[in-house]
Image (cartoon, rainbow, N blue to C red; front, side, top):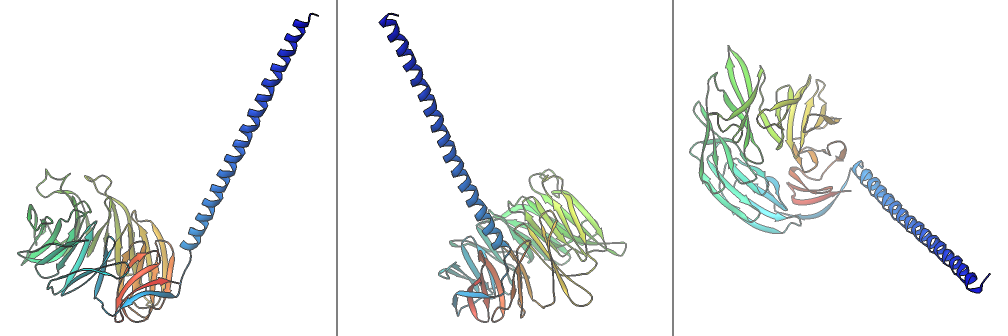
Length: 398
């Protein structure tokens, strides 16, 4: 064989070996990259599982003691949250503090029975049975105004619009004011008559476009209730703005509440009725829960509804529901309380010797707070601001 031919064959074999080596090296590198990716994925999965486990354990943990994080001698009869501020208010005015207890602003007013309602960045304080109104945001007072008739109930939208149920003699009206105090050209009038009914409770949607009313009237000597849904967008072509209603025989519904923009609840003498507002033009009943025990007290907000039932033997049962009416918690207890509120993710019963705090599905605290708690709101995970005979304090469950 000629030398040049032999050299060509040798070069081809060397070239083939080089390609094989390159292929093998690339395969090994790809394998190493895959192993590294799998390790990273495994670490992330283990970390996520650990975080879920820690969170789950924390969610299911119960407490019977607490630590005081801060306290002061000043206090207030009522309190509420507005964004990152705590509002303490009374008949003489309102003050705002941050979560650390530092005072931001104060505003005076004179009211006999102040009630605060809030939505989004706005809080509205009205004098129940009076005519005075004050509107606030996180920077302080926005405006104040006076209504021409006594205020029975009110709501505020996330845009600062106020809706007021006013009463004068046998006539009741729902009137609206924007956040500057200007009366809007919207009014729902109701006269004590079978055709319309007399409003006893109302709730304004967060957007301000929806309103749910509980109206009572007599029909052949029997008390009837109509839960009416008004919508100022979908019902703008109707004189009464009513897009739907439900009637109930021999039952009063003294409280109604929006649980979200798409759901509402009506609390009756012996039941809680949950409504779906997914179709704003056609409200539907999503769940109706009827009780055999007496309804003692109710509260709603932040997507939850709470009902306390009292049995014939004097014991109590707390029922908590989600916004569709599904029961998420049932808990029996035998202590007395004076307040029930929903704040953040918590349902709170307090005011007596023993206090109870639950989430939607779990008992978080059952124990005794020192002093008499007159008002309490959630200010963080397991942290609560309290007003009482002790002044003001922030406590953390321990």
